[in-house]
View 1 (cartoon, rainbow, N blue to C red):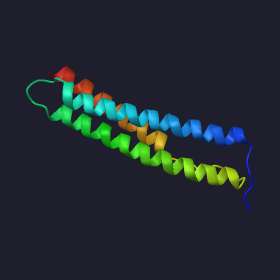
View 2: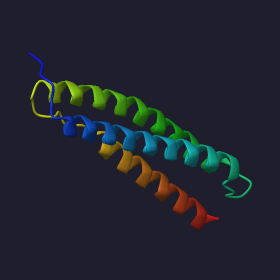
View 3: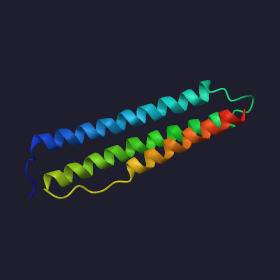
Length: 109
């Protein structure tokens, strides 16, 4: 049986969802900016790789945020523990790797 949870839990879940969407938007903006404006010399492969990885991460983050919001809301309504997620690990690893690639490529040139 589902019950109406304390509204604070629902709003906290929504704030988390919106935070993931802001992260997705930042990935989209960073990826598109990298492709358009990042000048790492005549070879543009690094800018394209960074752009594709960031935009792909944004897409995954958007889909993952929606999925996480839904399953958390279900768990909250059923008074069950919240399920774990790997989304923060994925974001941290990807953004860290992109930053390291950008640093290494810029130091090389």
